[in-house]
Length: 79
Image 1 (cartoon, rainbow, N blue to C red):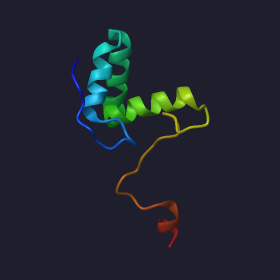
Image 2 (image 1 turned 180 degrees about the vertical axis):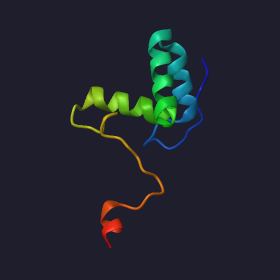
Image 3 (image 1 turned 90 degrees about the horizontal axis):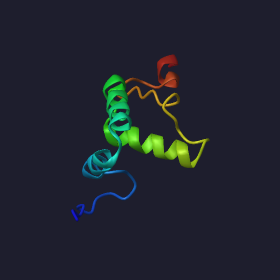
């Protein structure tokens, strides 16, 4: 069995995400990868959001997550 290098335990590592994708049925794996490509999110983020939504319906979801990395916050724009 392949072991994963110990990394930050707060987020899914890229290697762990790839291992998870490898064991999913093709249609589910393809849906996750397509969503990651369409939204320009990492596959780790897509998988984390899917798992979080399953575990906690009030968590951040795909529809809630629209990161605007590098853009000022609304409060910054008004200033």
